[in-house]
Image (cartoon, rainbow, N blue to C red; front, side):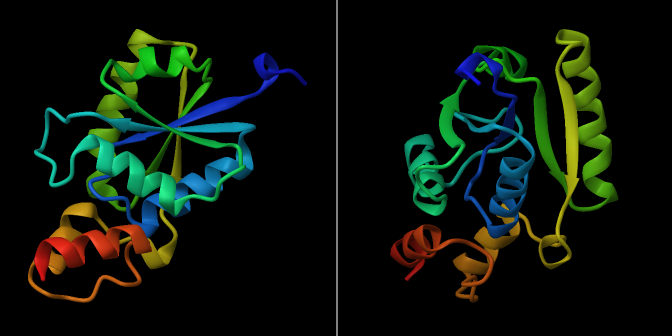
Length: 164
């Protein structure tokens, strides 16, 4: 199989910061697809980020095993254009609760309109991460709560620098 025959999926997000829930979805996607490109959105129109894009990318790379079928890359284009750049046939997103569904449904329909050949696939959050959000983790860390089992070591270290 050459590189062009690989079935590629994109796992997009702001990852501000990456959580164990994100990593769980990425690892599970890596089992299903030949190549997974973790797309780190440079800036979000919906929310301000605590961490700069280079730092978010570095924390993701530090939290994922090297020499695998997972690649991390920043993007600042339409998601469908980023997916096309990689020859992706799927977008993989995690769903935690019904509250995620409405927004994700709208985005999937817009993406389908722009790229009918690009499927959106949802993986349900593992039960232990069904409550987990980046914004919740940031709030816990800011006020001195323990996030050790919610985020990878690279994020824990950065929170310690910021909030202690």
